[in-house]
Image (cartoon, rainbow, N blue to C red):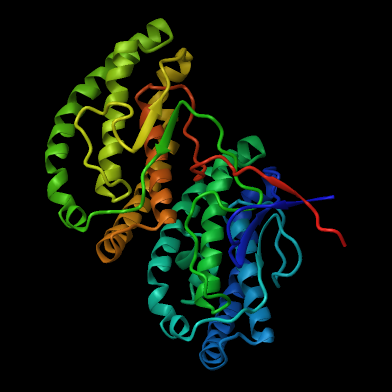
Amino acid sequence: MTRVSRPGRPHPVRLVVRDDLRRNRLTVFFRLILVLPHLVWITLFGVAAFTLAFVMWLAVLFERRAPAALHGFLASFTRYAVHLTAYVGLAANPYPGFTGAGPYPVDVEIDPPAPQGRWGAGFRLVLAVPAFLVASTLGGSVALGSAYGGAVGGGVGGLTATVAFLGWFASLVRGRMPRGMRDASVYAIGYAAQTTAYALMLTDRYPDSTPGKGEPPPELPAHPIAIAVDEDLRRPRLLVLFRFPLVVPHLVWLTLWAVLVVLAALAAWILALALGRVPRALHRFIAAFVRAVTQLSAFFSIVGRQFPGFLGREGSYPIDLTIDPPARQRRLGVLVRLLLAMPAFLLALTYSAVTFVVAVLLWFCALLTGRVPPGLRDLGAASLRYQAQAAGYALLLMPRYPDSSPALRPPPPVLLEPAESL
């Protein structure tokens, strides 16, 4: 017999995905009407849950452990919010139940009550503010909205709303949800579930923003534009404090360079229509610009530490883009490239908002500790990668559409160990 083991201590709130990507076109079309009973119920359920969370807070302060009955009720609310958010956001297909019980294609496992520190419990809402900022930008939970009486308006927005909007059209046309979009949505849902559980005192473990967490881990297919992260987490405080003045010369330089890139992209478009591919010299010039923008964005957002160069050379920065050589492209796809790129631009705009929130939080973390959290750093890198892929697609660097999955690295290998004798 064998058992599966993975390195690292698992989070007490774990995302589990069993979705097969198929979507019923009829229920997709009427999705917002079908969820109306749930939106009334989640608001009432949320008021009860967040009221009982105060009782839970007192219990943890005095006993250092959540009562089993309260823990079970709030865990059911958290799971129900996950199911409903997945349904609203088109990350899952079946109609959810009203209790959070039973399996669902997008679900969370929540550990039983465990001892918690009194200091962390006493300042829980203050400590949770950074997690709330990330969760609200990702927009992955109707539970957070129900606390304020507006389940959809307060809890589903940002990345989840953009994916749901684009996925609605894709699901109606294909009867399937694109895998990358589904993975982006469930990542947001999983992070919001951990934030909800942390706020409701179900656990004192802080939400993990590392992209790609879940069972099974999301796929990371090969792509012509990929990002490599090869840097430690230390950040010199002085370099962080004066980050904006340091990037001003780059901003001036990239603005001038962008004018030439627009002309080069126009020439590339004409030549790709005639030849079926972008000439290597034009490809190299545009790729250097996209790489330089990504390197500067990584530095400015504190995702990267090192001061970037001005030429966008591959391998010159620890957080770097690898861009494949020019490949053949279909002329029809080249002709309507900007039209095809509109959904990618919309999602890239959402990922840029994620990058902004990550940059603000990393700036404070780096000033206080001289380091940045690895999960936030990786989330910022994944956001920059999608923005680079969207730019590369629009500028004809590749015929492959951007991959919206937030996974940054391939899934870790599964280790098989001999089972212990009974």
